[in-house]
Length: 288
Image (cartoon, one colour):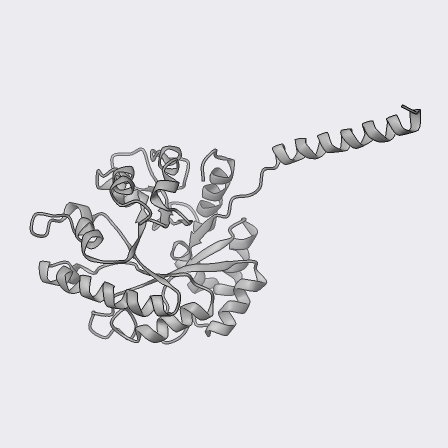
C-alpha cells in the first residue's frame, strides 16, 4: 500500500473510532415526559410561556397537560398552545381531566367531552386521562356509574383517534367494593387503558409487575416519581428514593409502555430543581 493511501485509510479508521467513542460517551437522550401539574404554582406565577421554555431547556421532550377548561389549555387556545409547544420542541402526548360530575363543573368526561377531545386532538394529544376521583365519587354506586362513563367517554375519544386512560392513586387499592379493589374492577369492567402511577401503586403495597402480567399491554402510560426512605414515604425526586425503577422498567414491554412522565405532586425544593434532578438521574440511569 502506498504511503498516501495508508495515511488516508488509517485517518479514516481513526475518525470512525473517535465517532464511536463519542457515541458511547454521549448516548442518545431518552425522551422523558413531564406532567406539568408538578409546576402548577410556577405556571400560575410566571406563565406557561416561561415554564415551557424552562422545561425544554432541562431536556424534557414531552409534556402531559392538566387543567383544560372552557376550550383552553393554560388560558391559551389550542392554536396558541400548539405554537408554544412547537416553538419549544415539545409534544403534548396526554392530558388530565376530571369526570365532570362535581357541582359547578363545566368540563370533563360528562361535560362538554366532545369539545375537550376535539381540542386535545388539535394540539396532537394521543391520550386523554381521567386524573382523579373526588372523595364524593368513591361509593359503590359511584364506581358502577363510572364504568359506564369511562366506556362511553372512551368511544367518543376513539372516534377522534385518542385513547382514554385512568390514572390511579392509592385509594383504588386500599378501598374495597363488593370485596374487590376498585382498580381491578376498572380493569375488568372498562375498555380504557391505564396510566399507572408507580409511586401510588408501591405506596399501596402492590407490585406493578403483577398487574402487567395479569393485564399485558394495558399500561402504555406511567407516572414516575420516587418514594423517600423515611417513615412518611413522601414524594421524592426520581433516583433518590426507594422505588426499584430498573426492575420495573424491565417489564416495560410486557406492560405495553409507550410514554412515561416525571411527576412530583409535592416538592421540598423549588419544583424546577426537583424535575432537573429527576431527568438528570433518568438520563444517567441504565433504565428508561
